[in-house]
Image (cartoon, rainbow, N blue to C red):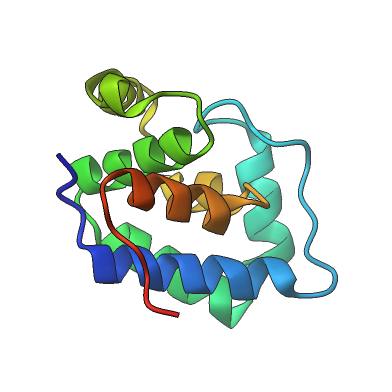
Length: 128
């Protein structure tokens, strides 16, 4: 069961689309987990970006379990897990959780698509 607020998730999707569409936004290879130097690189390179700041603020306002659910939703949309493995995805996200969740998420160039696909598996869609 998805407990994340769908409207908040859709706002994060919109911000991710806007951020990744900007010229000059580039990232190291897609990260495997929520830790590593690449998160600091994103902050150093794009920390002053208003879209990134709003994205980060929204994520940081979420409780850790909600941040973990957002990461699990990314993994579900990326097809690392199936809907039947949702509890496993949540458990892995809890194990991997760090305070740099926003950086981890925005570090995925296809984040918006993955989150949309994850939401769709729970029967939700963002309004266009």
